[in-house]
Length: 161
Image (cartoon, rainbow, N blue to C red; front, side):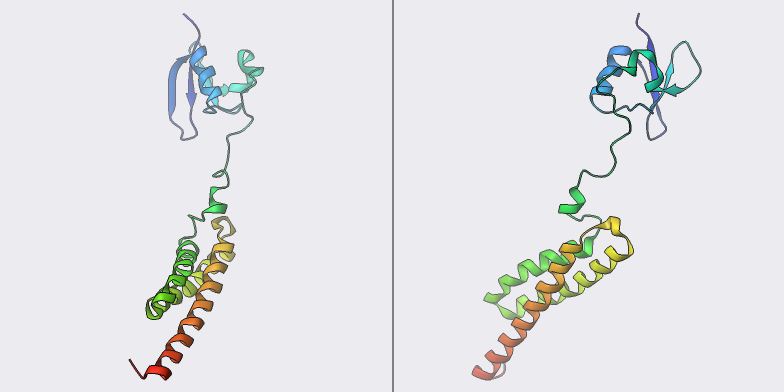
């Protein structure tokens, strides 16, 4: 029977016992790092995985666990909801050119949420979403002005609603 191991996950829970082969699979799946605490079945001591001779030369063994979200929050600032919603409202407020009052209803909240989103980025840069917030601000302001002008011009041409 091969050596058995238990590991402590980043959540503090213990996993195993698992065989050497299964632990090597976990390493290949990036479920373990050199710092992952491991206990061999013959020992009561927890040691870093990278200190065990059988795993020191493992090419797949990362030094540390991957951090962050891999850049997803830069493209989609899911931690900054006001900036994200303001962005989409600004984009869709352009469709209001077909119906200016409806566009204004989308553009004004886009402007407001863009400002809130920008404040959130300044308070917590990890939230990301600066570009989305600015698009909400600029798009919302632009379409607010366009729709106000359209309503004023429409009213002066055809009288009040």
